Structure formats: C-alpha cells, structure tokens
Image 1 (cartoon, rainbow, N blue to C red):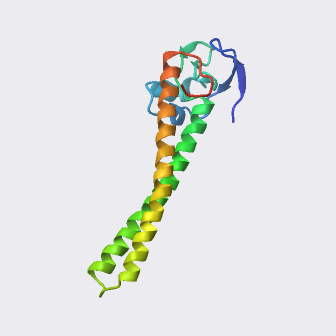
Image 2 (tube, rainbow, N blue to C red):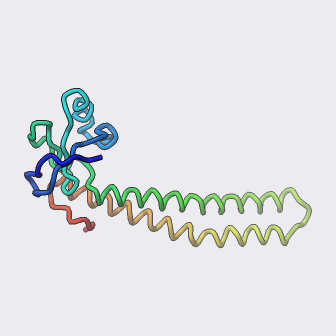
Length: 158
C-alpha cells in the first residue's frame, strides 16, 4: 500500500509513495513521469491536494493526481452507472418482449401489457440512478477544476 515519506509543501499532509504510477497517472499529462518513475525511483503524492513529488522530494506538479475523495466519488459514480445500466437492460428486455409478443404471437394482450408494465416500472429506478451518475460526474469535474487550479480541496464540491 502506501508508505509515509514526508510532508506536502502545499498543504502539510503526509506524502505517500505512488504504488501504481501508470494506473494513477493515466489520462493525465503526467503519464510519462509515471513511466519514468518505474526506472528512476518512486514518485511521492499527497492524497489531500493531489501534489506530486520526485523521488528526491522536488515538487513536480500541483494537483496532478486524484485526491482520495475524488477516487471515492469516482468509484461511487461507477457503481451507480452499473446499477443504472442494469435497470436499462430490464427496460430494453421488456421492450423486446412487447415487440415479440405483439408481432410474433397471436393476440396475447396480457403478456404484452405485463412486459410493458415491467418496462415502465423499471424506468423509475433507471432515471433515479441516471441522475445520481450525472450529479457525481458534475461533482468530479468541479473537484478536478479546483485541484488543477491549485485551490484547496476540502472534500466537498462547489
């Protein structure tokens, strides 16, 4: 896991050794520094403000990596999107059942109404979890903006 390696110059919190630099720095402009750290020595990061330090303790970038709160919120967003997609699958399956019952089978109105009702009922949780995913995505964007601007990140968006 993480090993203590000093204190952050920007916020004063403890630094940790970046254990998986390619995964943590993926989709950032600091990916090559993470790849180089595999050969030069470990990078140190602050999980509170996202600052990244070299193996010698020099500040490489402020706000380079996701903070702990951002990682938690991102995991929450992904979980909610999986639940949303599950309810979306129920909606699509019920629509396919309605189409199959209406087009392929002889006048089975009860089955078509039941399949349509299941689809309509599944729309409510689908919409609920879709909204949760959208709010988490907006919060993540706001937190990333504040982190990359170098403003202190209190753990709550806005």
